[in-house]
Amino acid sequence: MFSDLAAPKADPILGLTKLFADDTSPDKVDLGIGVYKDEAGEVPVLATVKAAERWLAETQTSKRYLSSAGNDAFNSATRALLFGAGTDAFTRSRTVQAPGGTGALRLGMDFLRVARPGGRVFVPTPTWTNHGHLLAAAGCEIVHYPYYDVATGNLRFDEMMEALRGLTEKDVLLLHGCCHNPSGADPDAEGWKAIAETLERSGALPFVDLAYLGFAEGLEEDAHSVRLLAQRLPEVVIASSYSKNFALYRDRVGALTIVGTNAADSDRAHAHLMPLARALWSMPPDHGAAVVAHVLQDKALAADWRRELAEMRTRINTVRAALVKHLAGAPRDYAFLGHQRGMFALLGLSPDAVRTLREEHHVHMTGTSRANVAGLNMANVERVATAIASVSDL
Ligand code: PMP
Image (tube, rainbow, N blue to C red; front, side):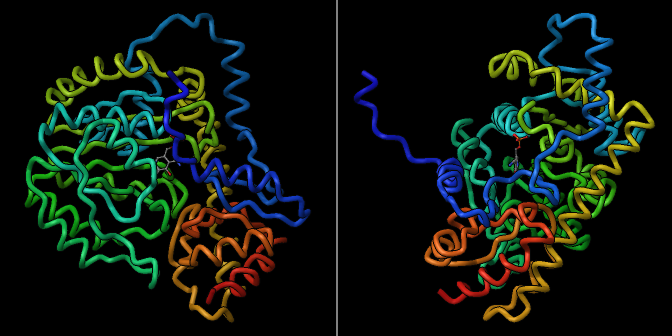
């Protein structure tokens, strides 16, 4: 009987949406769920996406089934975006389209059980909460490794490297390719080199979650992590999301890319991915992937999209710098936020402080004090900074 079911644990992010909707203040600010908002607080459809959708509506002649791998043009464009067309990593990789980054992660985790049976998955602390749910659903054994110190706002790099000494050739290392969620703190170039060396020594497999490509410094710069790993290591697995950089959230556009030692190995791995995808969703939704493929293949649209992406990135970085500036007199030094990138900032506030921010200042964020920087704009950033400063020692 359904009535016998225990009450499920409330989803903290969905709970936030309700608290925000119930807040009647005209000054309320939503720094909760991770979506990019423009200066006006809107989550708009990109102009290049609109153009591709018009093109699609006019030229598409059939909606017949494709294969479990999805849209071939999209898959090839994804590899080109990750590695550069024609590069060695491009040639030795294969991509399967998936429903969002979440779908790509889940497909990848199912694949890990085939490719690394009995292996453990090393996961950073903290990490995106859904990583734990996905790994549990896929039946993967989790080992947590220290990554970020909320109290100081720094990477726990040495502790991380110490923990990664425990990796064996059966294991998998989950990494955020850029714009780590929730901290925004990424390794620098030296750090990525050290991680690649550890992986080389241990033989462990890197599984990179790349949900914010283009949101830190630029498309090429942000791809540095996956390019370096693919160059240094025989095998890499990458879960990409187009939810943020194409603002296609609800259209569910993602991709799982496997880099093998050579093209024949990757073809073999790809053949294993197909039945796994078939058992999960049979076939990924085409619309958003067809849109992305068209934008990336059309020179003029691709250039326009790069400009739209740069605009989103620049706005986030500008508002982040403004937040740091207005927090200068706070009881705590928040300068660390200025060195971090992407949509999120982990403020390191107590649950009491987060509640006070919400109830008295109408500033909403997750209970862990993760703030979506993209929810700020030049009109509200000073007020929000003042509010954060006022609760910093609660
Ligand atoms: N990985 C990380 C780190 C994320 O933050 C997100 C989105 N919040 C995803 C993956 C998945 O994105 P989506 O499934 O919406 O494409």
